[in-house]
Image 1: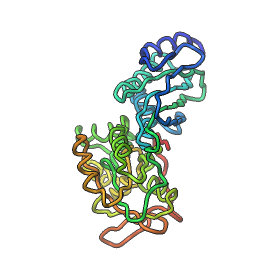
Image 2 (image 1 turned 120 degrees about the vertical axis):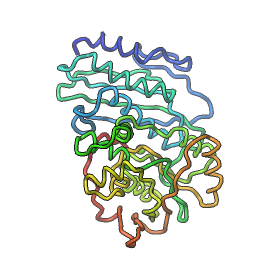
Image 3 (image 1 turned 120 degrees about the horizontal axis):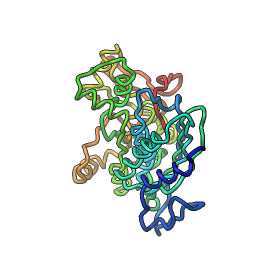
Image 4 (image 1 turned 30 degrees about the vertical axis):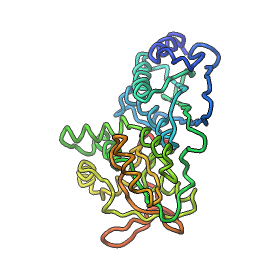
Length: 336
Ligand SMILES: [Mg+2]
């Protein structure tokens, strides 16, 4: 790529010098990491392609940088781990100004600093068809404590760490279909553009063995809970009245003529954690979150025998995931 060396120099300046446990960072053939004893490593990778996973017409590059790292950190959060390092493979369109690549990198570094992560290397290539990003994140967790998708038990309660549907509402606002008063508009667009991975909550759930299973909400409760149910060999019943659907989501839904619970359950990209807890641990769970200064998790239903996910409302029960369920059309930047 023209200017590649200049770009790499500028990128390494943005990503800054690595901490001492990184024996060698950007600039050699590979990075060298000192591995801490008594830890298991968590690895995750995500590929993001312009026009498929993000739309630069309403996504500022600095937000894209934040989000591309944040959604990977969210996967580490879902495992209950501590994220540590990131590697970036950047496909940059030759028609775009290199200064814009630095905006993207700055957004990534904003998230890296916020969550104590160091970008330790990567690669840059010319990508004439559009911007592509591939991010690898490495984290660690104490042996045997990682939260998995396959541990949910019949009778467990299902919780989420925060509100549902804000990112989906934000996407609708950014696409220009809906307008809200400025404060609420900012809330929903920030939820979509700058998601906050629930690392502290994940580490608490894993460290105190509070959850039997966990996943981060990238595709929406319906789809992500279905992954937990499939891996655990169970079904789930959700209670419509208990879903934490904030006011701006209700407003956006009403402007679009949608049910708010559709945005909440199928919209995706909230990057909250969904987790299951033995009902005997309910009090301990709430105490642990309060002591850690984290918002109280919201119980939204329970794990049942069988398969599929049903939503219990005033008019009875409806199936929202399982056989024959049709996923919401893909919207923005989604990961695993
Ligand atoms: Mg995930």
